[in-house]
Length: 294
Image (tube, rainbow, N blue to C red):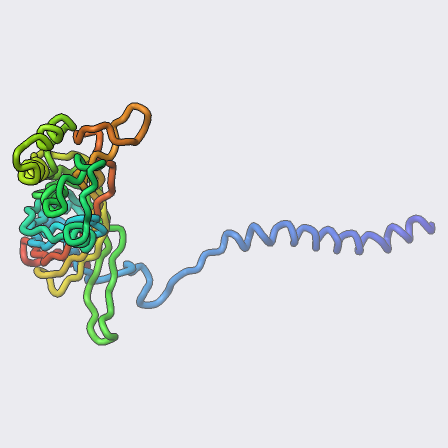
């Protein structure tokens, strides 16, 4: 009898424990299945309405001004044009071309020309002080084909008063650059100058003779576009163009033992360098009316 009474007493307690345990096991799955339902006027509406698609199925023409950055000896100023066609508002293809309209010597070049001293032991690299600014390498033109990706867009506030539509873009492609460098020169040619009647004039002439070539390499960069209206905008961007060239015109290397002068100025004296450019352009989009979302 005692056992039966105990069972009767414990049975309700066991049922309550099972119910609590079952509720604990079931509750998480029920909570995970719940979703927040949007009601009212925002129900089923897109994230953005009446958004201008500035690029989609449009042609962009961008006259621009470009200048090189972080140059050792000479800075190049370019006038150019960037053109693009965009399949969507975030993807397109483009071409870019620019012509060097001016070259500005850096302070380092001015210091060398004004204060440099010709060393007989390095006369091949530095024949005369006065002709140094003519032996340094310069860019004469550049061109590229590229894929352009626009991952971000929004509005930019200017002085918290003026708001302009803005997007951020990146690009990658292949580029070519026209270069003028000091022509290949050997120690034998310099020795012949030493034996000339006017040694200084011969050295100066040998130092200032130049040759042209084309360098090929990748190009990549990033920038922002500001849209003043549906047609006109402003573009600011950075471009990288890595390739090998001899910026100084010196006998830098070529010796089989390592990076030491070998008595010749040639392709072995070119160093790989990431060349930086900054572009400022005015963008013009055609057709003149951009598409607008619902």
